[in-house]
Image 1 (cartoon, rainbow over the protein chains, first blue to last red):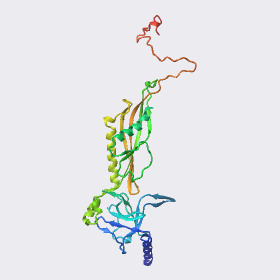
Image 2: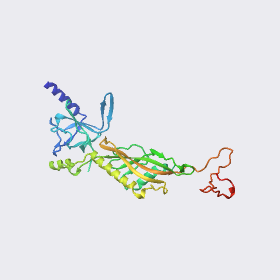
Image 3: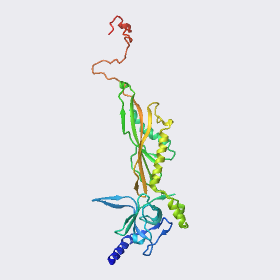
Image 4: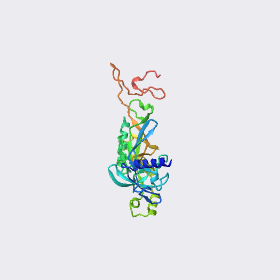
Length: 126
Length: 216
């Protein structure tokens, strides 16, 4: 069992934090930046500008950015009703990090069975 | 009919009073990118939706007929979150400063809600102002104007922003004037619609040409 979990975590690491991932930084409500993974190295995840949701047999494209992170890589996992800030790549072709905030309208979704958490960044201005 | 003048007059009145607070699209129903309308209060005037043409005696040749019209005005705006970026974007900020800035952050949907209320407030004051009562049209053409039935839509996320639509109704009474020309049947002479008094209220003959005739 332990070995199976280890394999799953290793697979998750390759899928979520592999070559197609990008750097992510999180600012906790306590004012502490999370820039590194618990497993070592910089914190990384999958950042997408749109994603597909399956409803029954229908696929729906949701046009909003989403960040997919490995729960086990985080020293603290965002939950609903908390105010976090996040830095993600500016665009798919621009790796420079830009400051955003986690949506106050859409809470983080924790998919514990797959060991993932989905975050929804929102544009912020002064 | 005169009601066709109202949507354009409505858009012109709102454009003249905008002062950079919103953009008037007139009857343009083209969609907008969330980024384009970000924090730019905006509304779209749509076409005539419904009306009630009241039956009345004045409908006989010339009017006017009271036309109670409803013109829906659509509002559309987008907002992002608001926070103290001077602190959040500064690597030299301390943890308590970061925490304080995050605690004071205003979510996008809250901002959108506030902006919608502000926009309706602005538009209501413009359209209910006595100076705009007739929408700049001919005196008496538009009367009894009213701004009501505000309905805020449901906020939804589009990209990195929150969009909030809504509507309100501009209702007014427009004077419609039907044609005054009375058609004549083929082969018939002109129909004389002139009313000549031939007897007074007591029944006494007043028309000299009919003197001696028996009153009905």
